[in-house]
Structure formats: structure tokens, C-alpha cells
Length: 240
View 1: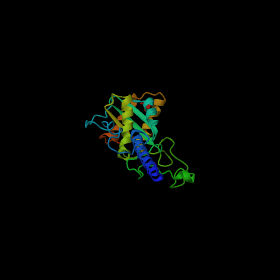
View 2 (view 1 turned 90 degrees about the vertical axis):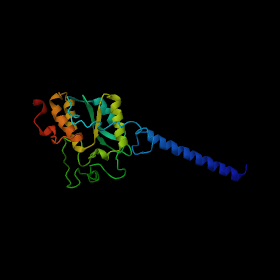
View 3 (view 1 turned 60 degrees about the vertical axis):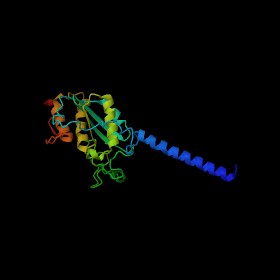
View 4 (view 1 turned 45 degrees about the horizontal axis):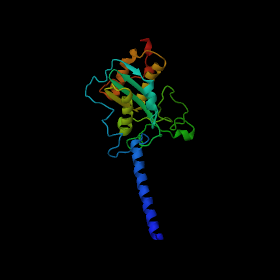
């Protein structure tokens, strides 16, 4: 075989291997939860029935009779790529998920390269908490803060639909009786969810807080007009 023919054959083999590798790479990330930005047709993460959000227009959908904090589900969701913090609550009807994101997976934000998170973390390079005024102080009752914090996102539409689908599917896998799975990375929702989680961590009964919890989720996910007040701004919740 001449040198020219051998060279052409080698080039052809390299091109074929390159194309196969590209296809495998694309397939890997479509199937992987490390990437939430692939919108290709047939992506397994989005080819199933939507696992999150409202499924009914019932105005009473968020009138839960009870709610519980699930440490097992919270740990499972927090372990997903792209998630730093998760708090999951289950009720007689639904599951509610509060999350904060990080940079451990691509495509967590629906807008791609445009920043949709609520944090300004430039203060980390300045050695201060609040870069706008140089203050080193912050409200340590909050897990999500405006500065030097993992990421929250004001609207659910700011999060990738694939990320939401993966979270919803994981919740339903372990809590199949959920009628609806509602997910938010809104900073106020995350911080108020933390207050309910604290009560569970302290082994305090959550029953007396059901009305407060319903006010929060109705405001965030339903048609509620009553603005929820953080528990720490109220009287001691378990003294009522």
C-alpha cells in the first residue's frame, strides 16, 4: 500500500473515531445529571412526564393538613450535582423543595450564560461580606444571603427545566404519593424553609406550625396573598 493511501486511510480512521467520540460525549451528557443544559430531542431527563410544578388549578392544593421535614430526601437532593443545599418537606398532598445551587454542574440556570442568581460574591476578593459598604456583618439566622453565599434564584423560571425535572423525579422516586412537587430557589423561601427545618432538627412538633407553613407555600406556589412572616420574627412558635 502506498504512503499516500496509508495516510488517507489513517486520516479517515481518525475522523471516524472523532465523530464517534463526539456522539458518545453528547450522549453521556444527555444522560448525565452533571449537565442540565442539553435541550436535545430525546434527552432522557426531559422525555418523561413533567415531574414538578402544578398539576391542578385547585385553589386548595396547598391547604395541607400536616407537613414533615424529610432529612432523607433533603440529603438525596443536596447530593445531586449542581445543588449545594436542599430542604424537603412532605405533606398529605405534596412535596416542597427549597434549594441553593452551586457550580458543580453546568446548565443549572435557565438563561445559560446570563446570571440569574441573586448573590453578589465579589466581596470574597475584598475580604468583606457586603462589598457595597465594606461591612463584615451579616444576618447569621439566614443560610442564603445577598452576598458571599451559594446561589438562590428569584423565580422558578430562572432554573433549568432539566434541573427541575431531575429534582422532581428524585423526589417522586422516594415519595411516590406526592400529587405535586414544588421546587424553588427563591432566597426568601429558602430562608423561611430553614426556620421550619430548625424546628424539626430540635425535635419540636411541627403541627402548631402547619398554618404558617401553608401561608408560605400558598404565597410561593399558589394564589395566597398573605405575606408569610419568618418564624423568628414571631413569638416562640411552640409556645402558642
